[in-house]
Image 1 (spheres, rainbow, N blue to C red):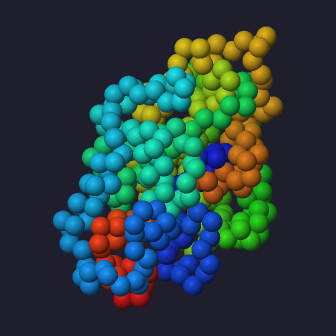
Image 2 (tube, one colour):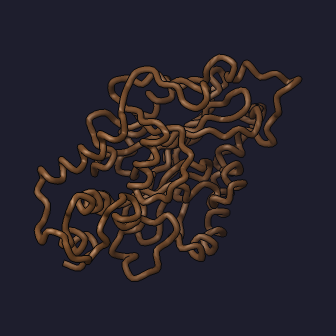
Image 3 (tube, rainbow, N blue to C red):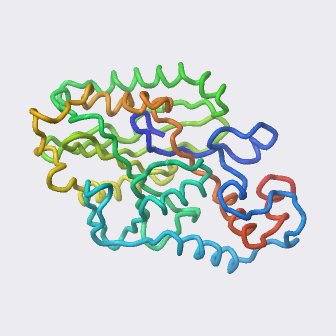
Length: 324
C-alpha cells in the first residue's frame, strides 16, 4: 500500500476479476507462478479438485513467514546507515524478506528496499496485515528552510491536478487511473527531530476500496530515509497510531545524522521539504510521482499461489478469478 511523495509506497491492486480479460499490467497482481517458483499456472491439470481447509491455509502462511526471518530488537539497515529499535509489537525483515513479500503482493523483483516492518502476530499475507517499506534516497542534504512557508492546501491542489494529468500515461502503461482524494493526515514537520510525516487518501479506478499512503521521512546527512505504510483506508486509525510509534524508534546512526552534515564536503539536495511531500524526488525515477511503486495484491491470490506451489488446486484459482 502510492503516495505522491514516495517511490516506496504501495497501492491496492485492481480486483483480479475486473482485470481478467485485459493484458497483464506491469507490476499487477501476478499469478502464483510469477511470485513463487514451481507454481502451476491457473487451469493447468495436476491440482487437487477441492477447496483448501483453514489448516492448509494457515500452514501455507506459516511456511511463507518462516522464510522472512522476522525479528524485533535493534536492527541496522543499509551500510551502517540507520538503526531501528523495533519493539515487540512489530517485526522486521531485511532486504531479502522484503523482496519476498513485495513479490508475493504482485510486484516485480528489484525493489531495493532496505527492509520492511509488520505488526507482530499477523502474517504479512493475512487479510488484516499491513507493512512499512523502508528505503533510502541519497541525493544530498535536504535543507528545511521552506518548512514553515509551505501552504499545504495549495500544494494538495497542485498534486491533485498533476495526478489527474498523468492518468493517461498511467493507463497507457497498463495501470489504473487514480484520484488523489485528499490528505488522510496533513503534513507535519518536526524541526527538532528532522522528521516529516503525512498521509494521502487515494481512489483507484476499478477498486471499490480506497487506498491509504502513510509516509515518514527522516532527514539525514546525505539523504532521506523513507518509510511508507502500505494499507487500505479502512486501516487508517490503526496505521496512524502505529506509524507514530515507528516515528520514534527510527534514527540515523552517528556519522549519518542531519547534524553531521559538513558543508565543505557534503552535497546539498536541489529540493526542500515541499518537494518531498509533492513527490518531486520520485518523479525523477519515472514513477508517476511515486504513485505506482508498490502494489498490494489480493490476499486471495497470494494464498492461492502459496497453495499451488505445494500442490494446491485448480479450483482455488477458478474461485478467485470468478470462474466458479
